[in-house]
Image (cartoon, rainbow, N blue to C red; front, side, top):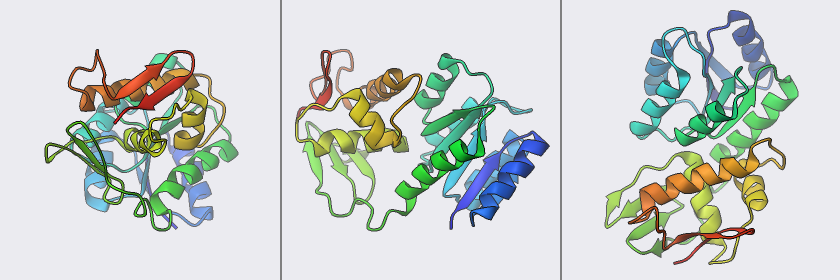
Length: 229
């Protein structure tokens, strides 16, 4: 069904996750460290990466940032045993799409995996949507590209999905809860508000002329966000 790269140094956990994912019909590669994970990310073009943040030779956040800096758009689900809000927020800031905190249930993990893979394999993708423009920015959902004056801008997958979700509303306000459900595909999270806020801040940094004084991606106090074209 999908090609999944699992970057996890705990042999027992990796064995169990691989067995579960393969039982669901996926093809799974396992990397026990960051160096192997980096090589396989570049060589095997996975549909999804499941990434442990605690690796023996590198920080998973560093590996994630490297992937995004190289233009990689593959969805990334991070695994963290830390349970600290700051670590999760840093993961989102570097381009993670979702997370689960150890210990986690198999059912929870598979629900997150299925949600991310649905976006990868959705029939027709976003091809039916128009090309949007605001300011100097052009957004093409069919190709998954964002341009500023014809020059490409690299967005993490969830940043792109969030941008499209705002554009779809044609200037209407989207609440944080609505965005969390639409973009991340789950209703409840311990840090749901910060998750959306971090991604909005990153969109402003990449797309606004002055991120501190945005003119397109606007906050509507006590309601959420809207995009003004």
